[in-house]
Structure formats: structure tokens, C-alpha cells
Amino acid sequence: MAGRRLILPLALALTAALSAGASPASAGGAASLLAPAGMCGPAADRTNLDVATARKAMLCLTNYARVHSGLKRLVGNAKLNQAGEAKLDADLTCGEFTHTPCGKPFDVVFASYVAGAGSYALGENIAWGTGTFGTPRQTMTAWLHSSEHRQNILSSAFHELGIGYVTGQTFQGASGATLWSQEFASRPH
Image (spheres, rainbow, N blue to C red):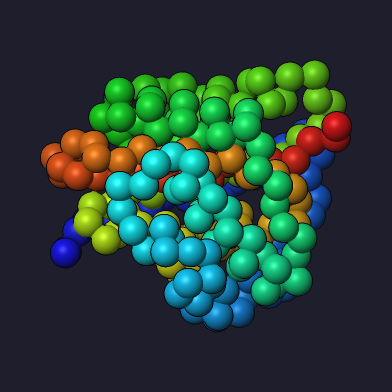
């Protein structure tokens, strides 16, 4: 089934102290960073997933790319999942596909994650698509083929990941839209 796809990176990583960048492998071929079919389970190629299954598939795809670039795996974080859901909810409510829906600052959804932190690093990838463009694999494929998105995925500055996922939406005139976010972060614990 054909569909629509839009992606938008926040290549800017907000930080109080961020000096590490993307790994040298980020310049490599994007196709080699995509997990082979079946590696992250059948859900990676399906639409209309439950949230937990969608997050598991996207975390697997993300960590495959990182490990194959010589980086450590990202750890899932519940507060970052909440940030991702909040970002997508705001995009839907405002009818905008942006990192700053309704004119709110990018980092407002991270308030509980960064509370009390003296330093932190934040980054975000968002995407939406219809039909097969909404699957975890197709979304990751698009992100890996975008240098800004790939930079966030392969940044050694990030250690944790939250995933926002909303499916079956009418968004910007398209029905059956799936929206994704990756919320990258690090902070001292």
C-alpha cells in the first residue's frame, strides 16, 4: 500500500555541557545500519502496533545501527517515552509537524527528565507516514538516510532513548497516519 512520509530532525542537540558528536561511522552507508528483516521481530515491518511492541521494535532498530557503528546501546527511559508521547500529542493537537508545536520550546517535554540536572544533552527525531511508511523499519530507513537524523541516532553523547508512537490518526489531511518520535538524552544520575 502506498503512503505518505515526512521526517523532521532536530539536529540541534541542546545541552548544558555537550562536546561529543556523532561517531565516525555516521559517514558510512545508511543501508548497512538497518537491521536485516527478522532481526527485530516481525513487528518491525508492521503497522498499527500496540505502543509497547512499537517501542521494542524501534529500540531494537536504533541499537542495531549504534552497535554496528561501534557505539553502546541506548537504554529505554520511561520519562523520555512520556516526552515523546507529549511531543506527538502536541503535534496532533496543534496540527503541526514540528519540534516546537503551538510555539512551545523544544525542550518543554523534557522537564521531568532534566529536573535537577547540572548538565544534560537532548536530541529529537520525528517522523510521520501512512501505509507502510509508518512501520518501524520504514521510519528508521528514512532517518538513517538523512544525515541530521542519523547524527542523532549515532551520537555518542546520548545514552538513553524514549520513543513516542501514535497510530491511526488523521494528520495534515491524511488518514491512517502513524507518528514517531525518538527522544535522545543523557544526564548524570
